[in-house]
Image 1 (cartoon, rainbow, N blue to C red):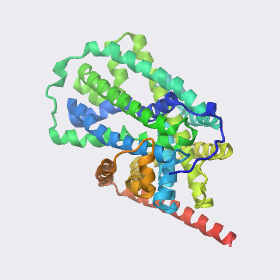
Image 2 (image 1 turned 120 degrees about the horizontal axis):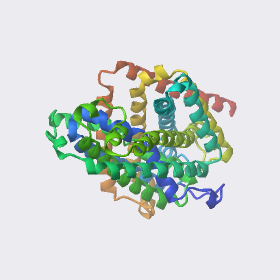
Image 3 (image 1 turned 45 degrees about the vertical axis):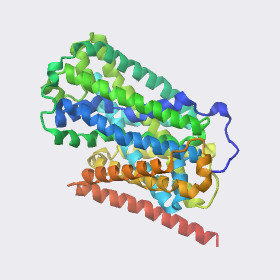
Length: 441
C-alpha cells in the first residue's frame, strides 16, 4: 500500500464527494447522451435498451477495479503508481502513454463537436470553427491551471446545469411516448443487440480515470468508491431513460437519421424554449468532457515523465507546479492536434484501442494486488474479497479483449497508427531512462 505522505495542499483545496461524482458524470456522459440513441437505433432498433444494459456490466466491473485502486493507492496518478509497484515501471509508462495519447487525440474531436453544436445554433460563425475549438480547449486549460478544486468547481456548475436540462427533457418528453414504436422490439434480430453493445460500451468509458486525482480528493479511500457507485447508477439510469424516451417519441426513420436525438425529440414534444435549451445543453455536455480530460490526462502525463526521471522514487504526490506544467502540455497538445483533426478523426478507433490496452494492463495489476500487498490487503478500508476480485478482473480482461478484437477487425490503418504511437512511447521511455542512467553513473 502506498505509504502515508504529508499533504502539499490543505484539505480545503481538495475535491469532495460531490466534485468527484460530477467529474465522473461529466467525463463519461459528455456528448454521448446526444449521439448515442441514433447510433444504437440504426444497429438494434428499440432493443438498443437491452444493449445499453449489457454494456453497463463491464462498466460496473471497471468501477469495482477503480474503487479498489483508489483504496490501495490514494495518491496522484494512482493507476500509474499501482502498475509501477505491482508490475514494473515499464508497464506503468506504457499505461500512462496510452491514456495520454487517447485523451489528447480525443480533445480535437470533442472540441470540434462543441464548435459544430455552436455553429448549428449560430450558422454565421462557421468560418471560425477552428478558433472555437482552440478557444474552448484554452479556456479549460486555464481553469485547470488553478488546480483540481477549480476544475471541479467549474464541473459542478456545468454538470448540475446539464442534469437539470436532461431532467427537463425527460419530464416534458416522456408523456409523448408511444409504445407502438417499440414493436417490433428487435427488428434486426438478437445478434444486432449484441453488436450494439460495443458502441454502447464506449459511451461508458472513463470511470476509472477519476483515480488519477486520488491525491487531490478528500479521503479518497471513502470518497472515490462512493462517487463511482453514485455516478454509475445515475449514468446508467440517464442512458436508459433517454433511450426509451427517444425511441418512444421519434418515428423510426427520423431517429435513424438524426445527429442529436434529444433535440429532435424535444422539438415536437415540448415548448420551443425547451427544445432550444436542450440544443444548447449539448455545448455543456462537450465542455464537461473537455474539462475532465485536461484534468485527468494531465496527471497521467506527469506520471509518464515521473517514471522516466525517477522510476524508483517513493514519492506519491505531485507538486502544484508539476500539475500546472502537465496541464499546459495537455492543453497545447490538444490545440496542436486540432490542426490535424482530419487525420486524427480517421484514426479515432486507434485512440479507443489505446485506452482499452491501458485498461487491460491495469486489470492485470489489480489481479495481482492482493498478492503484492499480502496481509495488508485485508486491512484496507475498502477491499473486495480476493475470489471476487479475481473473477472481476478475469471478466474485464475477457470483455476488453473481445472489444479490442471487434474494434480492430478490418481496420488496418488504426492498428498501424496504434503500433506507431505505442512504439514512440516505448522509445521515449527507453531513451529517457538510458540517458538519465548514463548521467547518474
